[in-house]
Amino acid sequence: MTCLNPLFRKRSNVVLNVEPRKRIYQADIIMIRHIADGLTTKEIAVKMKYNEGTIESARLSLMRKLGVKNAAELIAYCFRNGLIN
Image (cartoon, rainbow, N blue to C red; front, side, top):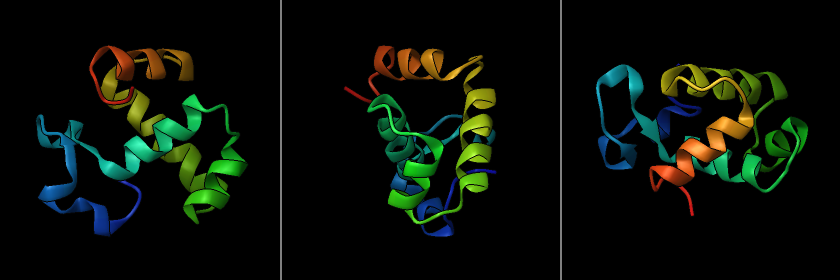
């Protein structure tokens, strides 16, 4: 899965443009910010208007893309690389 919503697949919404399988889209950043804010998967799903399974799948996919093992590492990676502040 490349991103949560086909609308976010436009090149203009690519936040981190690396090889195609590792691109991070604006929708991914929104999800990461919610995780950093301490929201649960259910709360993120409600805010982003997706079901919980979609959010969980997107989170796991993003973690695989970035080579991190858990949400804490995901947030740390994003802070270190300037994806969130």
